[in-house]
Length: 411
Image (cartoon, rainbow, N blue to C red; front, side):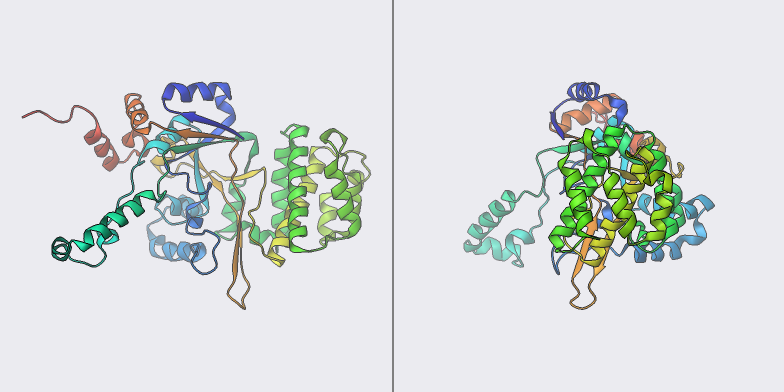
């Protein structure tokens, strides 16, 4: 992963030119948080009792029932995007084709921690605080303690993701009707075949070295999960075959053994036959379509392993699923944006109320740390990029006018 530090638009444009601007999509965040995460997951930090995620299906249903009579047919069809637009927590992540839009979001709203008086003096009144000087040292101690905490990073971030990783599953998400993709893949074979068809078509457009690398990565993760859980694979023979493949260089991989063994021991035998016909099974070396079959099969087994023996780990895939509804709102067109759909598994053991959340990680290819953000915002303003052009509504246009220079007269 490449990293750059940026303190001006000119440096930013230079980095984009070096990395071929058209190959990427962009996301700007004024706070790095812990990773790229959809709003529905942000309360979660991996704790036992203290950390929560939003019950997204419940919230979406409640919101839907309150507003259904006001929605157009497109808003009903793409209701997940409607939720995102109105601030309802979802598993969608906004991204943009425009690097300047991402730069705006990396800089806008960047600020310092705002404190409340109670954080420094507790429940004491101002009169008590003024009269009793012993509270003054407590105030100074609390002030220093709060100032030391890293609530805000000194920089914003822009994440660049290669377009070849994007797999459009908009139609599938619409059909799911707010059901959880990864959960449904564990029980719905027709859905598996639909995902396989989309992955297969996408893999046809990707270089063989790239998808071989993607397959190695998912095989590696699958082995690691099974080993950490102390679980056996389908068979020792399969385990040895995967291990052997991963020890070889990319140019030496044929996958012939693993496909043959998988065909004999795959838990969903009828489904495997739909992935691989007899002609494919006889090949010495798999083509891109065959690798798509194997990739999908291992993806399902990875999800199955995590569901049956939950553990704290994110799901690492090189491909990213996208949700690209029509331009329901002016903001979508103004920001040249669409969404990455961040699938997940959520498991509650039902006995001790112990829960696990497995989110698909969104790992950027390039990270840019944005410093000097106030000056960059001024530069963007000169280029006509401000709250008004980004959001397009009257309130934000008014805000951009008020924040522009030359609005005050000396008296």
